[in-house]
Image (tube, rainbow, N blue to C red; front, side, top):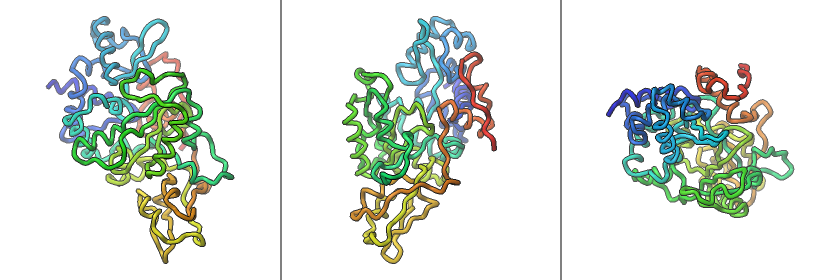
Length: 374
């Protein structure tokens, strides 16, 4: 294996906001070699996040433009890079590892790839992916857990995100598929991750996503809430196109909390659980439902450890007397997520000591947000 070309790609992936940390064993190079040919890795190592024409990428890589274009198209078909149609030509952009080309490997996930991914996740232990700010994902609360008289913004409601879309799909959870292949799966169903698009019929011909109706998408939200799965999505307000319904045993993000002990692995919602002591039966149903150790029983009443509560609300459907609900966190603890993914990238790049100018090509037409004030 030509490790040098994969080292170059690994460094490029680690130079973007999401990160791709190196390990002592070099397992990340074997992982990349499983997915990219040397020629593909050489091209990807020269790419920016914003899509560009194949000729521009080929020029930086010293490759033939025609051959590079065909190679880039092959990579896009396998979910390794982004492809867009622009001004009569295709353009191609780099994708992060997560959230990015890892999630697009459902059709190609096998035992070998699953084992490489698992070894890599365990060796990095949440480093860079999960311990940098702002987090990659944020929690969306269960709808019925929030009292109707509280003001709730659209980005805080899973149902509102679904309502704004024009097409909907559902796919298997890549994390549960991967964990099952290494013999560590759970009993939660596979087909739970939702995707959405602002145009109609976006998923009609997908090999990964099963197209569903809006009503089916809303029903799926209710079903996963009853199961106790946690809604998470991209940590920005506008342009949300997916909702993951996560379990703490398999989800790469939630494992940051439950397995790797990274408290900032996921952004909590702007809500927190509260218990009506007079109504609580002390049955412990909410304690059993909480994935994060935020609930316990004291004198036969449920007690909330606010330092551990993510505001997911999965405890609420389990309560037989509706004694537990969500309320807004104190104002000083409430912070809206970045407005867009570009804003998220700028903040994350700043936090990691990266320059946004090194991530996006010159003349990309992207407005770079001002550097956040500390």
